[in-house]
Image 1 (cartoon, helix red, strand yellow):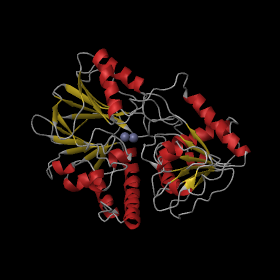
Image 2 (cartoon, helix red, strand yellow):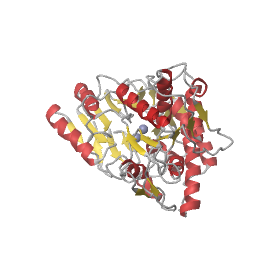
Image 3 (cartoon, helix red, strand yellow):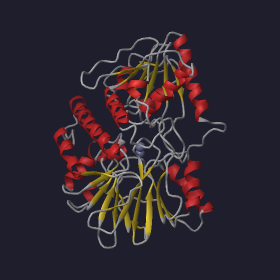
Image 4 (cartoon, protein in one colour):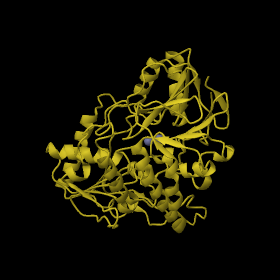
Length: 453
Ligand SMILES: [Zn+2]
Ligand SMILES: [Zn+2]
C-alpha cells in the first residue's frame, strides 16, 4: 500500500490523499477546497490523477477543506462510489449547494470567470453514487479485499477517522479529531491498538494551551463577557463556522442561560446555519453525541433562526447575540457584512471562538488595537474597531498533547503528518523522535509516493 498527498502544499489547505494497493486498487480519502486560494489553486492536485482511475472515494467529514472539491473528483471519476456516514452525506449536500451560491457571488462581485466550478444540478446528480455507512461497521471497498471502518472522530457530529485494513495490516486516517468532550460532540472513539500506520492531523502542533485551562471556565468567561455587554446596552457578535461551531455555541449559550449566567437575549443565526441545525435535530437520535434528544431549533428558548426559504436580513440591534458565519469573517460572508456596521459601536463586543487564519479579516479584527481602522472587504471603506474584542478557546481540534499521547500509546510503525502548518508538523516530528524512536515519521511532500506497507 502506498500514499500520495494530493494537497498542493504541506498545510491545512485542500485535503485529499490518494492510496494505491500493491495490486493496483486506488482510492481517495477526502476532496477538500482551500479556504483562501483562488481559482484552480484552491483544489487538490487532481490533474495528476488520470481520469476514471479511482476505484473508491471516502469522506471523513463535511467541512469545506475536506469536502469542497468532491464534485470535481466525482466528475473525473464518474462511476466511482463514495462512502461516508449518513449525517455527513446529508450535510455535504447542503454545504455543496451553498458553495455553488458563494462561488456564483464571487463570480459576480470579483469577476472570477471560472467560478462556479460546479452547478446545483451537478451537485444533485452526485448523490446516486453515495453510500452511507454506520460507525464501526466493517465494509469492503467494491471489487477489492480492502476492509474499511469509520470511527467517530469527536470533531463535529458525523466526523470520522477512517481505518483501512488490507492483508493483515491496518492504517488509521484521523481526519480532524478531538479526544475531549465538547458541548454536543463526545470524545473521539478510536482504536487503541492494531494500527500499523497512523495518518494524523497536526492542526494545533504549535499551540500550547495555557496552564489552568478548562472548557467550563472558558465558557463561564464567555458568559461574563456577554453579561457585561448586555449591561452596557450592546450586542455580541460571534463569528462561527455554519457546521459544527454554530451548534456547539448554540447549546453552550443555552446552558449559560439556564444557569442564569447570561440574561435572556435573542440569539440570531444565519440561513445555512439554520439548515444545518435542522439536520442536527433530524439526526439527533441516530448520531453519537451528547444531548441525544435535544432539538436545538425547538428547545433553545432564546433562538431566532433565520428562515431557510425566505431570506430575512439579520438586523443589527442592541442586547442580542449574533452567531454568524463565517468563523474567519471571510469577504462576502454574513459575519463580514454584519461587522461593517457593528464594530464601530463601543457598546458592542465581538467574541472569537475558533481558529482565524493570519490572512483573514477575522484575524485582523482579533488583533486590532482599540480605535484602529481595519479593511474587512476590499470593496468597502475601512471600519473602526471600537467594540470590545475577546477570544476564547473552544477548538474542535485536539490539543497537541492529546494527539501525541494517542500516537505514543498506539505505537504505529509509521506516522504520516498531515493537516498542519510547518511549525506544527515540526513540533510533532521532534516529539516522536524521542518518544517513538523506532517509528518512521513521514511528512508527505506532494507529488511523491510513500510506501506504507
Ligand atoms: Zn473539520
Ligand atoms: Zn480540516
